[in-house]
Structures are given as C-alpha cells and as structure tokens.
Length: 59
Image (cartoon, rainbow, N blue to C red; front, side, top):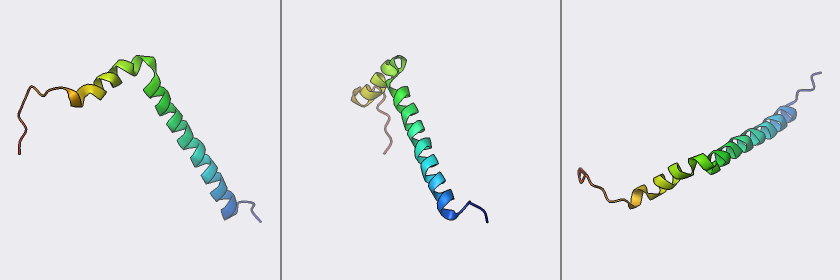
C-alpha cells in the first residue's frame, strides 16, 4: 500500500503553501523597505495631495 494518503498530501500542501506565501510576503516587505525605493514610495504617497493642473475630468 502506498504511504501517500489524502492526509499526507493535504498536510504537505498546507505546509508548502504557508512557506510559499510567507516567502512572497517577506520578499514584498524587503522590496518596500529597500532604501533605494524610499523616494519612489514617498512620491506615490503624496500624489493624491497634489493639485491637478489638468482639470479634464469627464463626467
């Protein structure tokens, strides 16, 4: 009989998925906090506060 039961595969998938998403999250945090990206994110954060020179909003 094979040792691959539903419970074994489900546990592997859960643990693997958790590790995968933790790695993706960690990569996103590192990217966001990387010193070279600071000015880019600072400018993006202030975009909604800037006055729109082109008042061509279509209703």
